Each structure stands twice: as structure tokens, then as C-alpha cells.
Length: 304
Length: 235
Ligand SMILES: Nc1ncnc2c1ncn2[C@@H]1O[C@H](COP(=O)(O)OP(=O)(O)OP(=O)(O)O)[C@@H](O)[C@H]1O
Ligand SMILES: [Mg+2]
Image 1 (cartoon, rainbow over the protein chains, first blue to last red):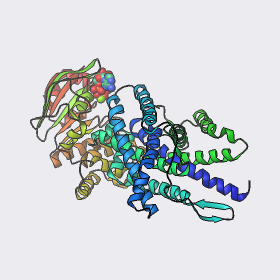
Image 2 (spheres, rainbow over the protein chains, first blue to last red):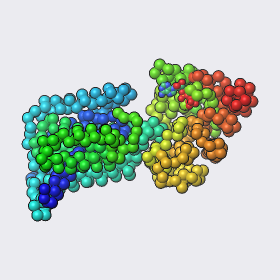
Image 3 (spheres, rainbow over the protein chains, first blue to last red):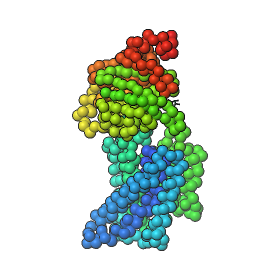
């Protein structure tokens, strides 16, 4: 592998890692406040992609086919908003009624919600893959030797970085973010401080689902064939990324996502490329064996 | 101020409170003593809304608050410093204190309340940017009380503030509790294993035994009551 190939793979790996990171953050945030894995999260990502599929033409028409970056931004925000609402509705209807029931009941419900979205998706969107419209003409914007960076990659990195910065601001510097951290550390104590736990949980679902929606758009831009089952694999891999970083740990989820994206890309480019999709599971098994709390996690007894 | 009538609380099938009644008047310190598992913490949890009463009434300034969500109860100025302190270990001391003022959006008010907390617990000011999980047990207790004070409480409940703290520091903390009560006029419902200290700073006391109040009197009378002396004051 030449040096420029190497850097090309790094870029590809970072972009794949960006999707995983954005999805993993949703898993980890929800785990933080509710101590449960929202297995329907990957399907919210799929809904994000379909939002883009149905709205892009209309948005571009409104902009008269000009201002492609602006229309891409509108599409992105639309998908994020729809997914945020979807996440809140899922929690409200499916998980909240089970709040004080055994965790297993909620986990099984989450799998039910996941299947509902996948097969509901097949019913409403059709099971056949759809070609995702072009948000921005994908042109090389720069390069070095044979190393090329395209518009879509700029979009993926730009949006991901912006979202991570925004998330960090929300979690660290707003009252709601402080409440989220407090709830994840001690929900009872947070309630005794006057925190309405339901509001915080809804907010967390909105935030995590919006990130998944954004990931759905960015993913579809990079791999422009979408189908209702497209959320399954990235969903599982992002879950692995969240565990890798230490479930419940926000920077951990982002770092876990990036690591997984890069590892997977390099495996894909190697002679072992057929094992590409298996690598996430190998990683999962290794962490659970050797460092179950993840890279940044502290060892705790209580899990799921 | 606070009036409990025939309160019953259970955990699933286990009954923890079997109809207790007590009142805390304006500016008073009332103490609740009793053996482990008597139901002291359960009483406080029911008042702060963490547990729902099964029967009976909890009246605050004449209004029924039993069964309200905890944040609705905090809104009324009722503050509960829970057993075991429950500070947020991964938040800084300042962030913990900020959580105490969660019900307000007013930064001017927060800095005023913060000044008061730092005045009575100067140690907290020194540790302002330290994570609460790295504080000593006594410092965490100061933080737990300080955190309640930044919420500008009108009624304060303290669950075993002396738990796991060296006797000398316990004395200091009790002195601060008295000061808070007298300076701010905040009525306090105090739960303590250390009955001696608790009865020394309170006006009234109730003895709880397996979910029932078996004795209520002035603290002075309780201190000389032979039954209380042998069971809770070490002879
Ligand atoms: N979460 C719970 N689930 C079931 N039973 C509980 C629970 N919490 C408390 N209990 C039971 O309720 C009764 C009263 O408990 P509570 O915590 O109020 O006692 P306490 O007087 O505060 O005791 P201590 O001095 O040990 O703190 C006990 O018998 C206890 O076992
Ligand atoms: Mg107790």
C-alpha cells in the first residue's frame, strides 16, 4: 500500500467512522439516562435517509436548483427534525409505559420497535432499494498527488464536526445538558433537585435521534442506494462502537466510531476484505473479553 | 407548615409505613429517630415524591402534595438531602451546587445563594472545580446540604447527615444545621441515628418503630424518657 493509498484509506475510514460515531452517540446517551440499549436506534437512521429521499427534489426545486449547499442543509435539518420527533414518540409510546418494569421487557420492546420500523418501512417505502438523489454534485475539491477529497467527504466531515461541537456545547454548557449528566449519574438525586426526568429523557431521545437522522443523510450521500433494512448493520456496528468507547461515555462513542470505521476500512482494503463486516463483531468479542467497560469506561458491576 | 396524616407507604407487597402522623411547624426542627429499617427514609421519600403514598395525606401549607411528581414538590421549596448524600460524582462541586438551583433560571439569585453556601461551608469554595466524587465523605455531606441550600428551600429534610462522618465534623455539620434553621428560619425535618445530637438541636421528636410512631414528645422530654434512653441514647 502506497502512502497516498494509506491516506486515502484513512479518509475513507474517517468518513465511515463519522457515521458510526453519530449513531453511537445516540445509543450511549440513551444508555446514560435510562440504562438500556435502544435497539431501534439504527432504524431511526434509516428513516433519516428516507426523509432525504422524499424531500430533496422538493427542496432543490424551492431553491431553483441553485444554492446546493443551502438546500443540502435544509434537507439535513428536515431529516434531523423528523427523526428527533420520531425518537421522542418511540420513547413516549413504547418505552415510557415500561419504565418501572424489568429491563428485559424494554429490551424486547425495543427489538419490536426495530422490526416495526423495518417492515413498516418496507410497506410504506417499498422493499426495493432506491437511488438517493444527489444533494451536491460530488466533485473533487482538492487533493495531493493521487489523494482526492470530494465534495461529499467535505460534507460528511463538516457536518459531523459541527454536530459534535454542538453536542458538546449542549451537554457541557446548557442547563438541559447539565440535567442529562446529572440524571445519568443519579436519577433519583436529579429528581430531588427538581429535574423533570421525563423531559430529560425526551430531550435525550430527540438529540440522539437527530444525530442518527443526520447520519442517515450523510450515509445515503456516500452510499446512494437506500432500503428499509439499511439501518440494521450500521446500527449494530455503531452499538459496538459505543461499547468500544465505554457505553454511556460521550467522547468514547465518538472515538469508538472513528476507530471502528478506520479498522473496518483497512480490513476492507486488505486481502481479508471478505471479513469486513465481521470485524465489528470480532471487536465486540474482544472488548467484552478483555475490557468490558470499554476504552474510557470505568469498571462497574451493573449493566443493562 | 408540613402535616402528615395516617401516611401509609409500601414497597411492592412490603409495608414500610403503617399510618404515621406528624407535623412540622414554622421555624421548627423536628427529628425522627428509630432503628434501622424503621421507615425513617421512607417517610422522607414519600414527602419528596420519590415514593407514592398508599394512603393518608401529606399537606404542605394546607395543600395536599402526596403523590405529586418530585419536581412539582421541589418547585414548592421542599428540599430533601437524601441518605448517603447522593452527590453527582462526575460533576464538579460548582455544577452540583448549580443542580441544587435547578428550579430557578435566575443567575443573580444563584450567586447570592452560592455566596451563602460558601460562607457556611468555606471548604466547598476551595474545592469548587473538583469532581464531587473525589471529595471526602464529610465534604460530600457539606456539598449535599449546600446543594439543597442553593435551591433556596422553604422546608428542608435531612436524612442522616452524620452517616459515616467523624464525630468532630458531625458536630460542625450539626452546628451549621442549627444555623441554617435559625438564620434563614427554615423548618427542618431531621432523620438521625445519632439521637443524642438530633434531640439536642430539635424541638420535637418522634420515635419510629417498624413503620409506626410509638412515641412523640418534645425533644427535651424524649431525652429523659427511660425507654428512649435505653434504646437510642445508649443508656
Ligand atoms: N427499595 C426498597 N424495596 C423494598 N423494601 C424496601 C426498600 N427500601 C426500603 N425498604 C424496606 O422498608 C423498610 C423501611 O426502610 P427505610 O429505608 O425507610 O428505613 P430507615 O428507617 O431509613 O432505616 P436506616 O436507619 O437503616 O436508614 C425496611 O424494612 C426496608 O427493608
Ligand atoms: Mg434510612
